[in-house]
Image 1 (cartoon, rainbow, N blue to C red):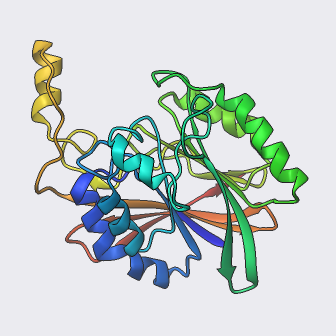
Image 2: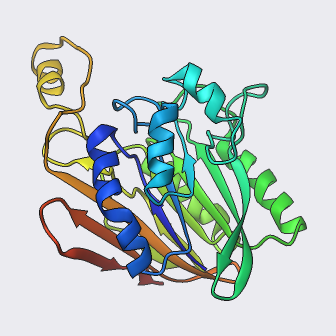
Length: 274
C-alpha cells in the first residue's frame, strides 16, 4: 500500500496548486490513497463545504484537521457528518465528529485496511485530552481488531511532543507525520518500521509568512499591534507531500515530494532508514 500525506493546505493558493498537480502526481507515483490536513484550506482559517468538495475532486481521499477545524463552524458541523472529514479525536468528549477512520483501500494486492488517526498536541493548543494516552487507547483497540496499517496526523506546536509520539509508538504504527507549524522539517526517516516526519510543511504560498501575507506579521513583531492574517491573492506556491509504502503494518520506504509552481520538476527527498 502506498499512501500520500499533504499537510496544512493554506487558502486558495494551496487548493489551486493541488488542483493543478495532484491527480497527475497521484497517477505518476502510483499512490493508492491521499490524506490531507485541510484546517486552513478556506481563507486560511477552517474548511468550508465548497472547499472540501474542491479538495476531494482534486485527488484527496480523506481530510484531517486541527485547532482551526471549527473556525467555519457551521460548515464543519455538516462536514463532520460525512465520511471524508476528520477533526482531532482528542477534542473534549461530546463534540460532533471523529478523529479516526478505518479506510478500505483498493491496491494492486486487493483491498487493504488503513486506520487514520488525527490527534492534536498540548502546548499552545485548545483544551484537549492528553494525546499520548488517547493514542495508546486507539492503537490498542486497532491492534485488537488486527488492523496493522495505521497512520497518525499529529497536529502539534511542539517538536518535542511529536518526537515523543514517535518514541511511544515506533514499531506499533506505520507512520506519524506532524502538522501545524507550516514549516517543513528535514528529518524524514523510518525508525523501527515507523515512517516519521516532525512537520510536513504547508501547501500554499511560500514567499511570505507561513502562507499568510507578510504585512500583519511584520507589523505585529515591530509595533506590537496585531491584525487579521490574510492569504495573498497571488503568490509563489508549493505543494509538499510525504509518501509512504506500507507492508503488513510496517513502513518499508518513504520519500517527500516538493512541487513548486512554475517549475515542472518534482523534487524528491528520500527517507533515512535507521
